[in-house]
Length: 80
Image (cartoon, rainbow, N blue to C red; front, side, top):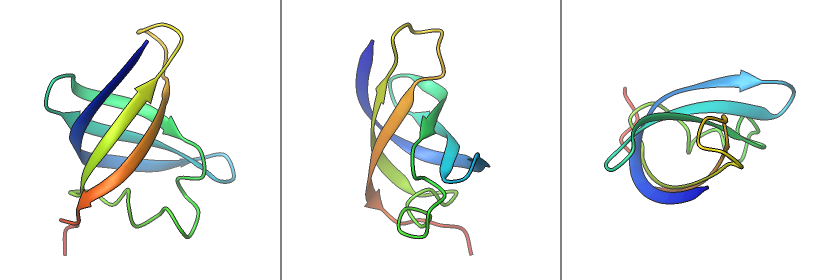
């Protein structure tokens, strides 16, 4: 199962050494969580700050699974 949508980052918490679990509020799919590999690394940390608008691609084998995100920053709106 795959979908692509725009969303606002609601939260990002560290998972393991370099991954992060990111929760997005998307336009078509509502509130949705997914795993981002390398999401808590120094290069990607800024993308997943709360309030940022991202273009996200979510992939999972079944719709009930956590799935993985691949995101691209569209507009930085991080809270001050």
